[in-house]
Length: 235
Ligand SMILES: [Zn+2]
Image 1 (cartoon, rainbow, N blue to C red):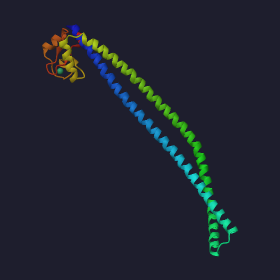
Image 2 (cartoon, rainbow, N blue to C red; image 1 turned 135 degrees about the vertical axis):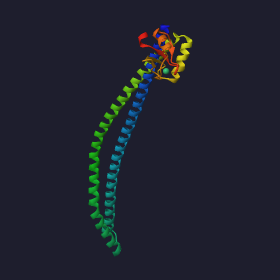
Image 3 (cartoon, rainbow, N blue to C red; image 1 turned 180 degrees about the horizontal axis):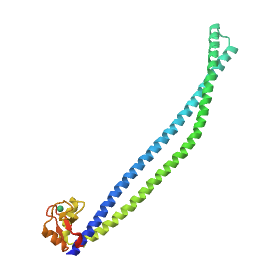
Image 4 (cartoon, protein in one colour; image 1 turned 30 degrees about the vertical axis):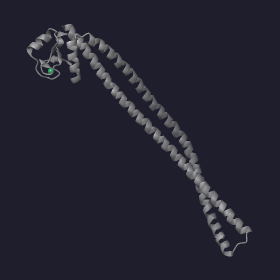
């Protein structure tokens, strides 16, 4: 009879080990999800950074085009003034326009140059940012791969436990095994110790007869919760 008890305990230990490994697996999967979120955030942040740089370049190009357009207008108006025969009013208007555009072009050109320079400086900064981004990304990918490695190791471990568990279960007489499986659906600890005359699963008192039988190494169950009971001293 004591042999049955020992086999039940061995099965209980394997099931406890499987539960613990599954808990660790879940925690690792949670960590992977977390690292994946950080990778996505890292990529988003860098994509935003690239967009900012592009916008700066676009502003600089736009300003340069604006300066070219003003320059072109000045040339056209000036050409008209120098070569065409035009009415006095129109001439006055064109002269005013040329004067106004000349006063404006310097400002626009300066702004275009300033933006170009800013874009050049930012391009250098962008290279540094990209290198830092790639480094952070590689670190995160490394973390993820390490976690995935742990997960596959753990899955193999669980599979191994399961095989051992099946073999251990087959060693146990059918009536004990089916009771054990029923208990396992209800409790994470189907086999518990009797401590100071009480079942350490439900904490209720165990009858003296049960304690005595347990002392002899018999397989006994709790009258209240049905868990398998054993006395440490009987092992
Ligand atoms: Zn109990």
